[in-house]
Amino acid sequence: MKTFIELELSTPLLQAIEELGFLEPMPVQEQVIPLMLNNAQDIIALAQTGSGKTAAFGLPLIQETDLSKNKTQALILCPTRELCLQISNALTDYSMYIPDLHIVPVYGGTSINEQIKLLQKGAHIIVATPGRLIDLIERKAVKLQNVKRVILDEADEMLNMGFVESIDNILASLPENHTTLLFSATMPSEIARLTKTYMMEPLEITIGEKNTGAENVKHVYYSIAGRDKYLALKRIADFYPDIYGIVFCRTRKDTQNIADKLIQDGYNAEALHGDLSQNQREYIMQKFRIRNIQLLVATDVAARGIDVQDLTHVINFDLPEEKDVYIHRSGRTGRAGKAGVSISLVSPKEQRLLKDTEKRVGKSFIQTRIPGGKEVCEKQLFHLINKIETVEINETEIAPFLPVLYKKLDWFEKEELIKRLVSVEFNRFLEYYKEAVDLNQGNGDKKRKERTERSSSAPSDGRFTKLYLNIGKMDGLSPSDLMEMINEQVPETKFDIGEISIQKKFTVFEIENKGVQKLLSAFEDTYIDERPLVLKLDGDQPSDGKKRTGGKKGGDYHSKRDDSRRRDGGHRDSGHRDRGNKGGGRKDGGHSHRDSRKSDSYSSGKRRKDR
Ligand code: AMP
Image (cartoon, rainbow, N blue to C red):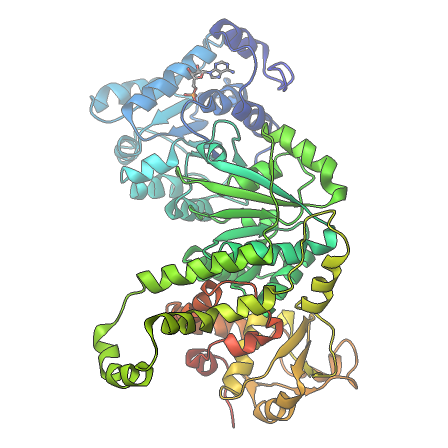
């Protein structure tokens, strides 16, 4: 905990806050004051009323003000007259030893002329409600061209009160070279839009202790061998069939690898990291927002722009080293009064980091056992039963089939019918988990068996052949894209896909031997735009794939695809969602092809066959 002196506040401010009885900075002040004083970065701060945020932005604003210039240098926007006066009074208190500073509050419901008179005398800092400020701008009573800092206080409240248009107009009228600090208790999508439009690479801060998010978050951890983390992640996904969360990884590479593996194993996941283009990132975030993705595997930086409210879980695949990163991560769940869980997968090496993190958060994390196979199966069974209980029946569509169905199933007793119905889904879990081992740290080598036998990336066992495809990351290809392409080309045939390795310019993937010829033939004369797709047996290619890629560098593969996906309003993805919602853990690691859905819109938007 720093002192106000260490935060490098000026003497008149230190004297004032001492008189006001502020002994030490509150957490929001400790974070925001140095950021504002030392750099000109845009900031988003998730903080509640009463957290001390007025002083957090007010003290640096006052310190920064150049009193030799009689110009408006800072603008504070807030939702109500009361808050406007409260902020203005607080700033007046903080500047009690800086008599030349002029702070002018302007708000609706009172004479505008009085306010114009005050403004004419000069206002270094204006505190305003948006509607009144627009009036004043229209009357040319305020000049904002010298504004260097804008504070949006209680931004979510301002939007709730219908100020969105006014805020847009105000922000659009400000000079380029200002920075914005946005305070909000929640982060609805309209705020995310504002931040995207008007802020440059904002730094996001979540105020731990005072944030309701943090209060509603349960922090748990699993003690686990580093090499078993992926298996544990799958268990978690299977144990919480309705999971909707972010899996945080340290590096872009880990992020991509883990997402790739999850997709191959039939989970409803995607990666989000800085190697993706802006378009790709936005597309994935949008899919996540509308819940077409259940698990987003992300780096901390890439996840900053996500404004999702009701995550059920945050999973720390690795604990972060950097101060506060854990608080930001876990603050993404448990928002808006909802309960959330932050799960950390902690290897023996990370035990010390766990202790440090607990200290930073100010709470002990609860050690929890990784669920065993039996528990996962039980959970999945009841999830299935719940779905059966609550599924909506389309009476009209199903009616014509019912007589035949009734007749066909007529000879089953009710109990037998239930067993069969449930087994359709449930058998997969039983099969996968029948020899499931205990992944909890310190439970012997038994666990190695599951890892090697059931890992999604189990090495080829002679059942598979490696194929080479001349598109890769540069073309925006992801494992799920590849699965879709294969499904499109050979929709009627079922075979397994093994390991997928997507490189910069090409991809090598394993396919069950019986599907090789079919797929090779299906890919003949196939194009992405003007570029021929080359699918071959892997082996004789140069490893960088240079000779094979012919055609355009970068390609229009992904942008076309994005367009076609957007056109169909995301319906196409509901197939994925269903797939994920069936629950994650699959024995059929390489069966995701079988599970994937065919998509017509994709093929028509992306390539032509038989040209
Ligand atoms: P705010 O979130 O700005 O509305 O502040 C909440 C209350 O905390 C106000 O009454 C402030 O005067 C008070 N306050 C702000 N900072 C401190 C501090 N460092 N120490 C004690 N009280 C403070």
